[in-house]
Image 1 (cartoon, rainbow, N blue to C red):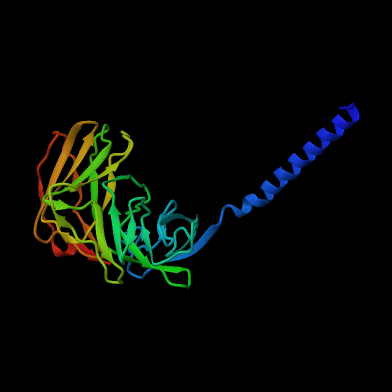
Image 2 (cartoon, rainbow, N blue to C red; image 1 turned 90 degrees about the vertical axis):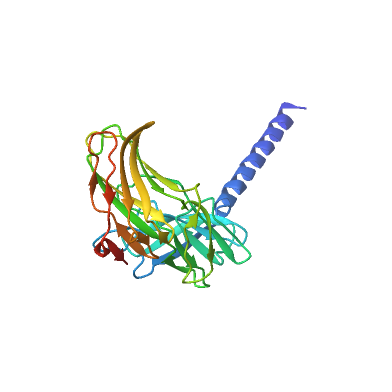
Length: 284
């Protein structure tokens, strides 16, 4: 092949490569089909817990939206600090049937029944995000209205040892984590079940000697919590324990059960029975 023909052939290949790359770049915006949904927190429903009654979405919040075959995750992209948030995500199909908060790969839906996955562990959130279970029925408008499926226990802890790295809530004889069935209804709830497994919720945090007070929120299914304990651990060491025993300790749908403030006593393990009066239970 002459030098001129060889040069022409190389130019043709180069042009073909440039055109192919241009086509791929032109197509790339269309491979990511982002969906935007508006999610409203129903009056009296909180995704962020405040004793003063704040109703808002928090930065980092994510929801699971059913696309007809599976759940896709959508993340808050606007509306932080308000009751109406804008969620955005790359969905594999149009929003259908149901959306759940918080997002989880463990959620599933089939045959008209939602299996809501309640985790057994969370990372501590400084902004008070309680991650209580919520469900929204999807309508054709693209707007979601979330309602409670359970409630929350609030625990304010002081005197936290410097080596503490996690808080654990244990419900005696009750399953409070894992998969729970929920009907597609505005009145649906998650109900605590009897059992000796799946009865702990762990909230992990980074040890910090300068932070001796923390507030923990434990998302829970509806039920009677007449016998439970809260503990602090540092590694494998039990640092503190408090018991809560009283028949009035009940989690209602959209209920916030506020535990009286407690403190680690510095003697490794304390066993203090905490009793609740009616005024410690707040119905949102």
